[in-house]
Length: 393
Image (cartoon, rainbow, N blue to C red; front, top):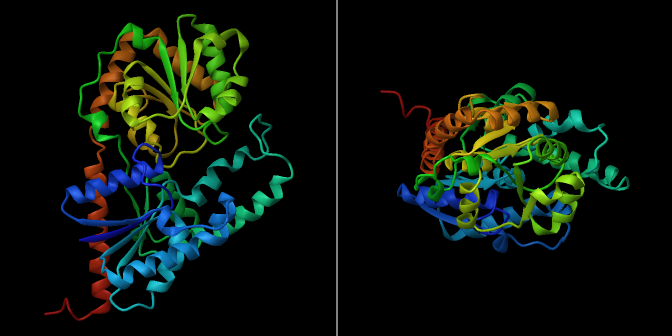
């Protein structure tokens, strides 16, 4: 099978969604399929503002880049990240012998809006300037329209968690056959070597990995991090986030615990593996996650993960068995969950072992295999619609 993968970002295996695309491409090739890719340098842009680019420019540029590639090469599947390929899907409707178009979501925009809506009127420290609110609402409306068009024109939509699939079917009336949940995974290098033993030293180290923002639960991290460090004097906290946000991230923690908080910049996956292996506890307080790979990474290295009961974390963690789930935004719940782990070393060891075992179920080879199987189903259905008498004997 021949795939053309389109992603509006750099081919960076160490980043979030870009890493997802790169690992999927590698796994598809590992299964014997041909994979070509168009990244951001092949799409181009003239608008420097990201949201304006997404809302007004990106769909047209993806269509242009895809048309150019299809003039000289034939593909069975177009795998396009996020909904900005909807113009490609619309165009393909009128093309004879066209490839199928798979819209791959890394967290569906419409489900995101639903998940974070209860937080709209909450007074938070991490807010945008007031003048940006109406502009943001206008752009959000346009982007939501694009998300719906992506659902409409795609032959199939791939989402990374059951929440997104259920939400699209229930609230957007999506055809269940046209929305498939396919999970992401940890880095192969994280699954291959056996993690270091879960020790008392690891047990006293708490880790956060991710962007520092409202949707990632930045305020919850401030409150819970401060409270848990005050409660347990031997505990330390490491925050891995981009260097430009270090000052902001530190500002919300209590000054009396600041000396036990270490800030680290983004790093390669190899270096990050070493960071995971030095920690025993992990907190992921997001308000919304679609895929969210850091819990897969932490579990694969034997960390005890306390995370929000959302997205793929809800799909892969059984609370009390291989991690702890907390309602998003529940500061007291996070404090109780972490306290239970810290005060019960035997429980933490058991969760660590079970987390490692569970993480082995999620691999990029599995992800790629399920994408191929879904594509084959859609190709078969399309062929039957085009030749309705071909199955009759």
